[in-house]
Image (cartoon, rainbow, N blue to C red; front, side, top):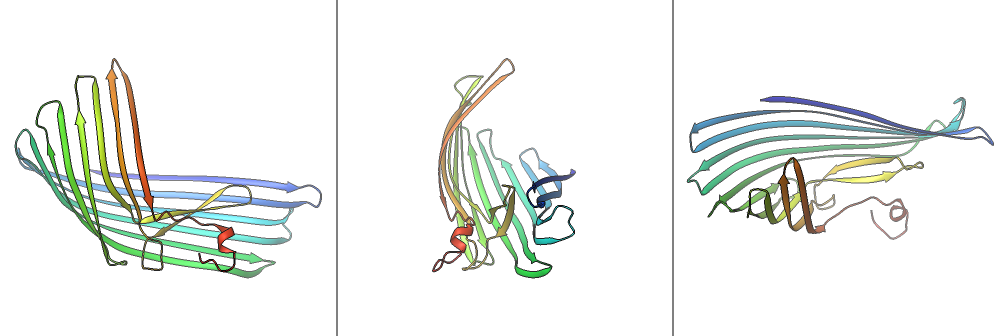
Length: 272
């Protein structure tokens, strides 16, 4: 199968200071386009092969202007561009060994690239600016085993091992899922796992509270580290006569959560 998706949105805010006719403009444009391809082949009744490829591109442009209302004179202009490219190739085998046992094994190669540009113009002269480019190949292997000892119980144990080429480090991620279905309409669930995210979003707020997102890929010892989370959760679902109730509670421990702070960045003796 093949699919395409495209999204675009624009946020604009204007304010005029009537006392001296100053105008302040915030403009944020976000666009996203992506496509995916999937191929499935049933070798026989117990063995299935699946391959897929996805490509996504995200672009965000933020523009802030401060000047006279008639725009004959511009005092300051700030332009921020953020681009993200996400390419993923995946190959997976599924074996239904018996009616109670299912095995899945696969490999995934991911390429993440980000570009972040800041241009500050004051009185027509280029002032401060920044340009941060980053990219990394991130391959991984995964394996999971699903086991159903009775029609009411299902357990799935698995793990993923990921290698980050830029950081030169391995990231193991074990996971466990448990389902218990005492009746046709009620299902209890529980899970625990380790998860990693290799791209982080920093938020920078403008004068009028329009957020300018800055996606940056994790890379190198001096860059942004991968976001690590350990999560344990439990809940239940109830489904009857067209009604669905899904309740879940979880505890998550986050490590390496990175954010931008203009206060910290401008404080002496503190590094950003």
